[in-house]
Structures are given as structure tokens and as C-alpha cells.
Image (cartoon, rainbow, N blue to C red; front, side):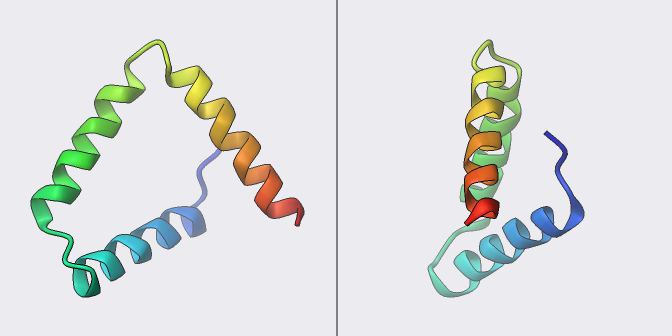
Length: 62
């Protein structure tokens, strides 16, 4: 799965909106980021990538 710059920008915009308007604290974002890095090192990482790939292909096909 290739993560493109526009996809990263969309997620960045969502985080900014959540931080600005929904009360997301900076430490919430930091914990989530660290959890993502730790999760990528587990044996579930290939399954998570497959689910994300399927979800992205479903979203882009509609």
C-alpha cells in the first residue's frame, strides 16, 4: 500500500480540525502516533494493511 501525499494531507487536516474544534489535546495525538508505531511492529500489521487497502479501494471505487 502506497501512502500518497494527498492522503497524508487529508489525515493531517482531520487532526487539525479535531485539535482546533473538537478539543483534541496534543498529548492525545502523541499517544495515538506512538500507538501506531508500536502497532506497526506487531504481527497484526499485515492484516491491518490489508484492511486499510480494502477500505481505501472500496472508498475510491464509489
